Amino acid sequence: MERDVNDTDLGDAELRSLGRIAYWAAAIETIMRDIVMGLAQRDPTANEQLIRVFTQGASWAELQRHANALMRHVKIHADDASFIREQIAAADQMMSVRNQFLHGRWLSMEDSSAVLSERRSGIKVHRFGTEESFDVAESFALTVETFAGAHIVAASIMDAKSVRGLTFHVSSERVLSAATDSASEAS
Image 1: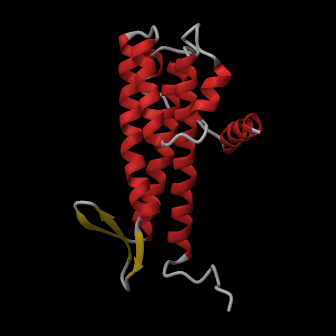
Image 2: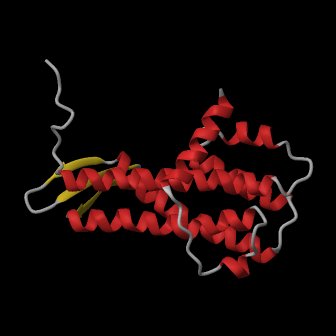
Image 3: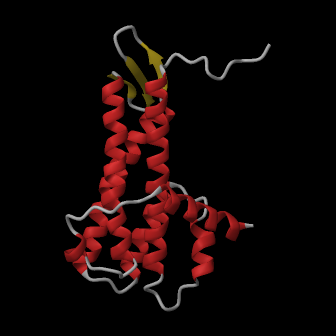
């Protein structure tokens, strides 16, 4: 007997919101790889191809460690390093939300949807409706727009003073292009 993959406890709006969260979280990870690459390019001894291989498939925590290690190693203005760290911290908060939503157990309730997140410290239930799940997805999109500034600073395109407060449009073509480039280099 075949299982109908469309038969879930969630409605279409909640499933679309989950898809948006996954989409924008992937964009955050792509930008984080770009940040690591931008920082690595500041080091004249860095092998760009090796850094690409090193970051390909790296977890979020590994990418954070790489970025922090590179900021200690390369020549970078203190304001720029501080800005990048602030942006990484904000993105890290969103990635924690991603983990709760995408790795949690979903339940459907009569008056709203809910996600049940199991944690080492106990079980945490997040209760929300369609509007709230859309708001979470929107928060991810806004995070991407500001997080892109950290890549611009890491790659020495602009300094933190010039980037602070700006938002950047990150198109699906840009994210897809970066993913395609990484995939073709890996093969």
